[in-house]
Image (cartoon, rainbow, N blue to C red):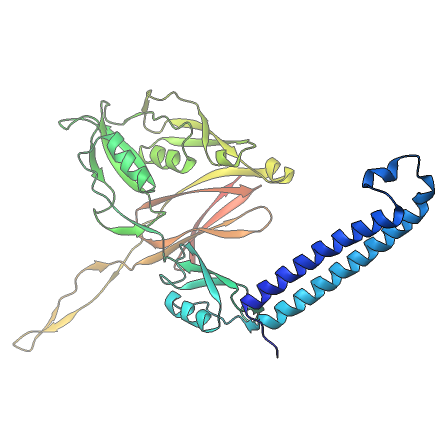
Length: 393
């Protein structure tokens, strides 16, 4: 098989370009000489009507020859490239470490290009997907796009206590940490300061875990000072309201901008008003839909669930004393860890998981979702259903 290096191909391209320039120049000169016209504009003057039929036929013939020549050049060039650059089969590098994947691709004379994504189903730095697909036939030197896992998206809980509300929110926003705010009476503490956090400092938790911070304010017990949720995500508003024992009522309104999807556009109570616990607040939330059917039947919903407490079991431990007698050393009632899952089913029968995690009995979790038409959320503990809630009835 004949092989051409890059230098030979460049020389071939330059020669082809020079040939075309000379060919077109000679063709134009021949036409001018043959028709006795000095310029192309002479063709259009009425003093030369007899030249029209012959010139048109000649131009058509010339154009046909040029097109055939270009087609032949393209075919020859394509053939040369095919001969000069061999093909190779793309190897499979999915589910292996990135360094090993690069080595395999380079050994097959292929380049690599990376994209990163958080994925809790693949270990950190493992290849999630690749393109072109394994087994595809490509030219040597072709780029293979790899999507690399960064593992589960997590964050480290920062120290926020004794910071002001504004300072804490700035840190949380910069670190992309989801949070909610609980307000308590100032009492003997400093006003507008973070006094408690729901997660231990420096603990590593999944990115979707909401960090609840407790802030002091000039309110009485069982009161809540309404926050300004306008242009805030619904998830933040709902978490904050529930944590302060205020009931959010969601009204969905269709919007034309994807940037406003899931954003609070209006609230029924002005920011700064003092509310008693168990008061209801209406939030108008933007919903972006891609078609008319979704615009008519899609809605935002808030799912707030408290994991019920269940009876545990007693682990009986019998020990032998030095005198040989038996003693009951049971450590009392124990509770088994359970894995909780919340599954959403919409009106069309489509299902998706909106929550899955090991949970503590008596704790609560909140999930924001949008669903088509009537929807139902089922909650499972170790694959056993323990509750459900219907929406849009």
